[in-house]
Length: 301
Image (cartoon, rainbow, N blue to C red; front, side, top):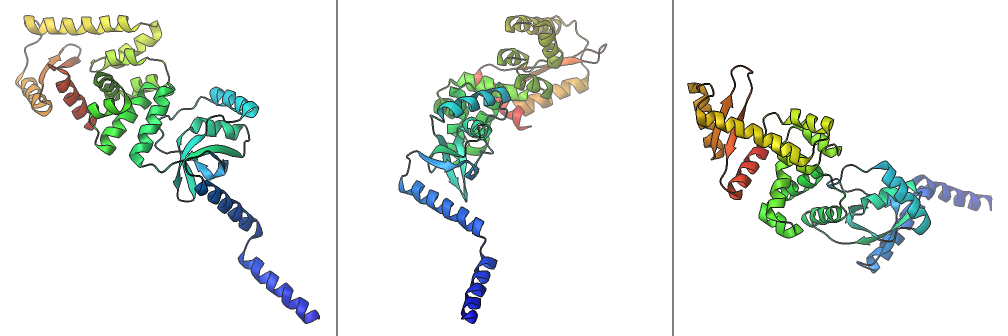
């Protein structure tokens, strides 16, 4: 009798050494959840929050903590009304739309969240993420521009196709992409909300743009104010060139103008001030097609 009991105990110890009971329970729970999910495709279902991961290509990079806390309070009271859109990603589920709700649910200590699971390509994921954020006005101007640029670089979209796909005008997309050519300090001001996209667009291609950006912030200038300042500076520069009052250009400057013109395919004027050591480069375009071409070349440099 004792030998039989010992054999049973020995068998039990053998299984325990190969199989962790807690891990086995987790595996069973996960398999049950997967079975429930696969049996009802495209319909809302609950999923353990730890099985969900954020999308690394999410256009929105900054999440305001106070907004998340407010949403978490709402979720505690009413739950998550709109399911999070996800797609299967190996042993987890990647968020396509609804990362803010997912983050807030964690703050609210919610263990399961409603999701809808869809099979989506990388291209579809990017488009859906952009559309959701734009519709909710969640993206700052740089996040928005980077999203459009991602469609162009990764999926071969033209600016026209980006505009058509997202329901925007082509000029809107062009102006958004132009912001990516600004100096890093101005881009940071945009991301922090210190400058509007209107302010930033007025500074694109301006020689002393960083100084003007600081002036906008310090003096609380309007978009119209900065447009007038920039226009006045360019007009004065053009007048000096036309009247021949600027310093006579040396051969090196003329050759550099020709080199830039050859590289960009656009007429280029270098206005250099020998006294200050500074100046500006004026690149002239005749239509939006040439502007698109210029922006595309600059952003690839």
